[in-house]
Length: 288
Image 1 (spheres, rainbow, N blue to C red):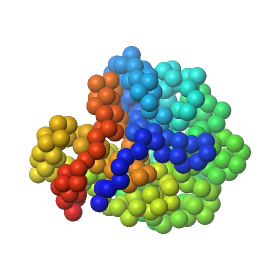
Image 2 (image 1 turned 120 degrees about the vertical axis):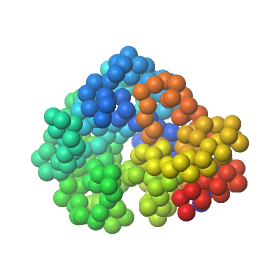
Image 3 (image 1 turned 180 degrees about the vertical axis):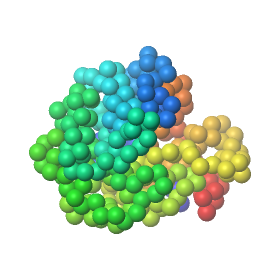
């Protein structure tokens, strides 16, 4: 299944080339993605080192914190270097207790875009993903009105490119009839492969498929298989799982998150790991 040799970057448009190994800023916030970081200085150092090591794709949202990660990104990296692309999401708010509250009303989507611009210190957002489904999986609920709001803001010059998060194949088709889609961000990893067909479709249509929770969902038995493969390759299980995703399709991009520079370096090293055919076969069998 995973037979594409990972490339370092993925070009989706004339003005949008992403490092396939990106960085997800979610874990920079406090526990439960709520409140300030446990170590502010380390959070700033992680962001700066990610960019220094060639990451040009940072995933974030104003509802991480809320606001915390966007303000950290601005503090660490603004004015932003040429070629760095910040991908954000709208479609949810946070309650005072940290609850995730879907928020897809047209006027609030517009407000969320303005808030992301403000907190990131930008005049235009490179990519905005519409968060449609949560982690319990997408459905086929129509999204035309909500995606249309973002398409209007794109026409107004506040957004360059649009994406989707937590969506089905049918929802992707519906959105594409309204405006081009450059990214899909869904739950997918070595174990959770419900979106195999969508991954293949994105590769065929040159749409970046960003897997969130790329390291989640392993049972003890699955972890044992992963650990054995990793030991043979002199790599960590996490690196092998990330490398499998990169080799899964030519348009897979990764956004693993961490609040530590050491873990960041380990994640980035996975981009250099090319899995041999026998290892791929063993790993493929985990999700069969």
